[in-house]
Amino acid sequence: MGGDNIFHYDSVFLSCYQTVKHIHCGHSQTKKTKQAMTSPSKKLSFEFFPTRTPEGRAKQVITRKQLRQFSPEFFSCTSGAGGSTRDGTMQTIGDILAEGTAAAPHLPCIGMTAAEIRELLDTYKEMGVRHIVALRGDIPSGMGAGTSGLRYANELVELIKNEYGSHFHIEIAAYPEYHPQARSAEDDLNHFVRKAKAGADSAITQYFYNADAYFRFLDDVRGRGVDIPIIPGIMPIASFSKLVRFSDTCGAEIPRWLRLKLQSYADDSAAIKALALDVVTEMCERLLREGAPSLHFYTLNQAGLVSTICQRLGY
Image 1 (cartoon, one colour):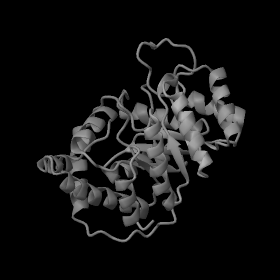
Image 2: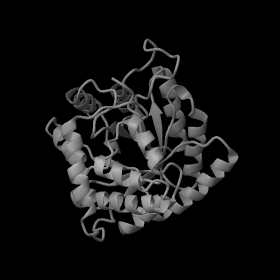
Image 3: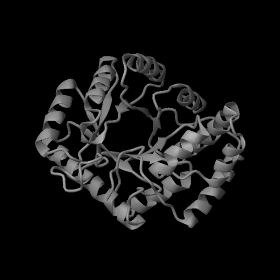
Image 4: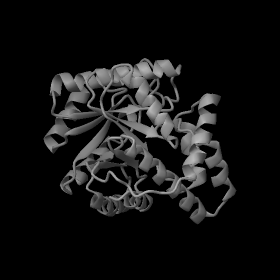
């Protein structure tokens, strides 16, 4: 089983049936008249990645200040597997907490021993962290498959739950369009069920542009006895080329009609953003209207498009 980082960078496949269904459903969505959001009481959350420079850190402070107007449940911060960005993640989490917002660090367990994980969790607990995004993570280059330590996210969830009780709210990753390294759809669903039943409190999905994939995933896991909240991950679209690169590697399907429409705009960034804002906002409206517990935005450390979508939703 591959790593389960949210907003994951790996190759992927999807069936022709799913692709055709995505095309149809996505196309019908763009023709709907936009409605005012009726569920602004549902909490939002926002994801960042650690920056490498003082300038980037200062810019992220401004970005978080802009997004704090939407009263987020928490800000999360990614962390590279094998501890590759651990210091940056720790610094970002400290900044978020100092600003008065709940913080949720990503914790990829691959390549870490149980003792190392306990040490990190103890540090987070002392800092005042109450949320953890529990992930397997990708195997770092050169580490090899036979590395010691925890190997699967369900083992991490079990460790946190058994040793820290209810102190940490444990989030796990979900893949409505299936993990890019999954052997099969059934295998991926079973992997998610194992993580959830190990003690997870909720899940955040990979981003997607077809709400039907999310609701089908809900039906599948509810039928397997999983009843935790599953929060849709939302990715605004600022650049067609970047979206294609991200999606081709992380397993998120771009409906064919949307891919072709965005492609037809070439370098017209204003037209791309206008269409993308409509498509993503309408999808968010439907998700919330039909029962999604909240939304989790992948910000890419930018506030502009995310803020516009949140405002359109009535937040």
